[in-house]
Image 1 (cartoon, one colour):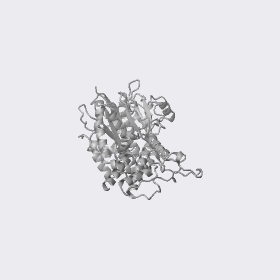
Image 2 (cartoon, helix red, strand yellow; image 1 turned 90 degrees about the vertical axis):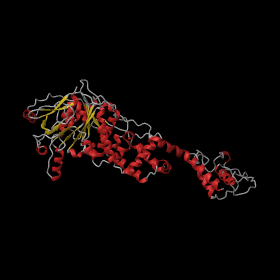
Image 3 (tube, helix red, strand yellow; image 1 turned 90 degrees about the horizontal axis):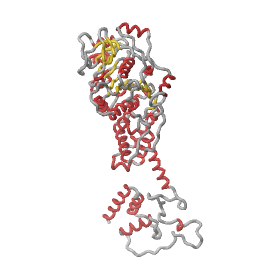
Image 4 (cartoon, one colour; image 1 turned 30 degrees about the vertical axis):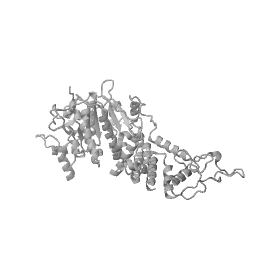
Length: 543
């Protein structure tokens, strides 16, 4: 059964948000200082009171006060008397604090693989070519079973691609060194902004946010975003990732009596600024489909025009607070905002938008049949929880007593791409290192030292050989008279030299021998085996 949530009041009627239409999304818009934060607080507390978990980003630090009960103030007393509203029953909300940097809440992490190349490319501000190389890095890592969990994994993978670009070129396409450098520089910039703390494990389990307390109230998850907002792309990408995770994580439920979760996206314009077309399509798809998972998304921004039309058209519940029209461009924005509402014959909507006071708003929620109500001018009710931030000590006490205390605080660093690639390089270096008694040799790709492969240490000449005993290199060899220049001579000479055999005085290699030797050195790999077959085949054809 639908539960009406009282949000605002006019002089003659109360304005309710119906819970069974809350997953049809919405927006809270208005200029700075017009009361958007208090409106957000009132709506979040209303959802929590009926058992709906809430997620919101606290960009100014004010929303932490929801953890404490509110109290009356002269201004609030005056407002309640003005609109004929009762004094709220003061009560705190169940709150869990989160923080990407782990300072003002429980750490929030995601893995590089889980974020994916599309959103990571957006975060790193890559162009189309660079995004293509990044996608190749993810594809090659998947094909080779290399986990990309944190930034050092991705750096190691990119370095591996750059060092072995020619080997991947045939199967995956060109890998530009310049693009790899651009991605590496972007990763460095993100790391300096705090990305190192965000990428890694343990990754956030969204079920930890879909909780209620012992009394049945929905937990309000507050992300400390005052520092995160200084990295706008990291902030917007993180929130978009959370939406995508909710969409993938939750089952289809259709229309419910109330949402399974409500997600408030504050400073929403940062999500859409300079977003490429493919990302906008993803956002539009997630917003359109996530309502069937029982999630309501509410965008909070200064102007509804900050939101693309394809997304704005899906937002049925709207609260418009004051907009100031000081320039012709602002006046056009006000007119456009007014036209998004179902008109009220008793209101000049465009004119009223510029006249609204603090805490006053134009409101249009969906009615019982899912249709937008005609726009009404009203006052947002005061919240029952504290307006303004709590102290640092109070925050730390809440964090320590949280149901997820100790779950995310300790990082996990398991074997992934960085460790495997580092170990592979170490093994290669160990195989190519000179062994005792064979200094200066070259590896042949099979784990043997070059130059005298197949010659045991006991038969190798040394400077301490006894006088009168000829060394192996000086020992005469018996040669059978054969016709020179045939393919048999070529292969015998080449393989004999490579595998330690001796045919007397070494002569200068011809072109065919040089090519075959080069191929044999790489025969240890799959690519090498293919090369040797091709080279030998071409030689045989010519002969």
